[in-house]
Image (cartoon, rainbow over all chains, first blue to last red; front, top):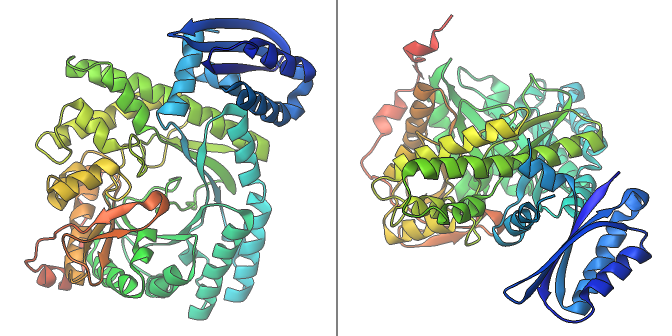
Length: 90
Length: 447
């Protein structure tokens, strides 16, 4: 399975989770795990998603998420999982 | 997956200037030697475009995949003097132009390898290559050059040191920027991914991917969390941070090589600054406890930094190579520039610092009226440090015509801005004019 991590950071407002989840659903990316919290009123969310089916279209998903982020006024990043593993594990 | 680890990675990249400084493809051009310069030039161009055509595109895709910027994509090639043994001056220029054109055609930022290795002696071709530098460096854009004038095994070629000093003056008379693209080495390494000194050694594969990491900002931020703690804690902190930085270099380099179907060479464990604030090696040293870089204690702090980076990085990567250490280029580091302007940092102190780190007197602007023999003597001093201590050292100084101490010169981009530094005015001419060869040190005879 190929996985990626989506991180969302910004001012809290209605519709962030909905907006991000809808974009992922529209792109056939399955959400495997979600962690969400408010740190000092800043909305932060990390999602682990399955991108096996859409590996070739990874860049498209990236562009769409960036657009959604701009609409919602939050910063959305998506990175392949390997970078987090390689940095923290031997 | 631990959410704190995710946040840490995101923060490193977005706030602390972490990046991969360069993915460099080394390409052997030994199979491109033609009957004359023209034919060699054509083959050289064809091979580079063939091998590196997809390098930039591949690296850009990996940047998007992992969200890590790869600042430069570069190529290093076989030292050109080895390709031009049967070539006249015009032919050599054709090869230089072909290299520059090939670099532009594949879209890389720099191409290194217009080089000569003359630590022991030089062939007519190598002399011709050095004579061509004023023309080549002023008429090409992306081509970088290096000359190796000393090694622990061979000693110091004082004839070459003298000639190189005179050449640096001639380059500056045409265009001082040319000297930002030329580095003079002792103990040059064959797998260095960093510029201006990258070339692809003859013992290397046909083509290979090498990676240089960066990230002084990340180290500085990490050290901010251990203020007032013992120096042991500082060393540990740098080690663990270097490990993380290097792991990303290892990941990106390995994937680039795999996608291009090439072997992965080495990770160069370096701390390379950029002129951006917060991306400075000087600021790391200051965070360790110096009011300003260049003051007493700088050499000790730098020694600790350089050593801890290696210890953390070695564990994080499969193969380590290149220069591997902290870089201290003056014009490319905001903190170094500040210290120079304030008068805290001198060439003498920088020279001392080069005995404990990679690489040398780097990106230092000096007055335009500095005699060639003084530049040669600076090169000889650096070479002596390298030769005696079994390490790479280098000189990249830029005499700036018409400018003196108090002025500065702006190179733009990653090369930054350099205040003119004072040099000692007493003459070294009689020493350099002796010529000949400084013998290899006794400890090089190990067999």
